[in-house]
Length: 188
Image 1 (cartoon, helix red, strand yellow):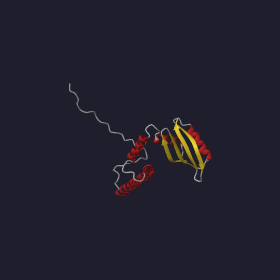
Image 2 (cartoon, rainbow, N blue to C red):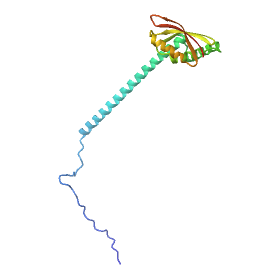
Image 3 (cartoon, rainbow, N blue to C red):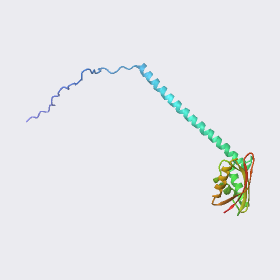
Image 4 (cartoon, one colour):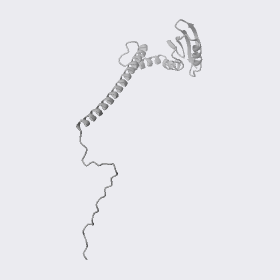
């Protein structure tokens, strides 16, 4: 028997095309002017977005730099108030040295920084300490409070709640700039 190796006959493809739809026989024409305008428009938008981003980052940098400058000025003022104007190249190290000297002199007495930190926990922005005198387990704090009687009484009541130190009002004098006070302090 002889086998037929010929390929089966192919059927012609049927084109189904809805009415009103035209198919293009040739590729679309390339219009260089339209392509250039589209490219320029896209580049203009990208440039505008990039400029706005750069402007935002510049404003952020300026804000952070000015804030850092203010913080450094306040820190310098705080160091100068404790160490004087000649504070050296490492004011924090010098501050630790001065604290070490103060605690070595009063080895078994009150620690001045711990005392001031505990006092500051109860104080608000209306309190200013002018003088701290410590001797052994007792000491005095002298300062000013803004002229508000009710707030000063509330401040003294807040000091009474301290668990580590006992603050007692020794003297109080009303002046034009506020209430000048002297507090006795000791361990509980």
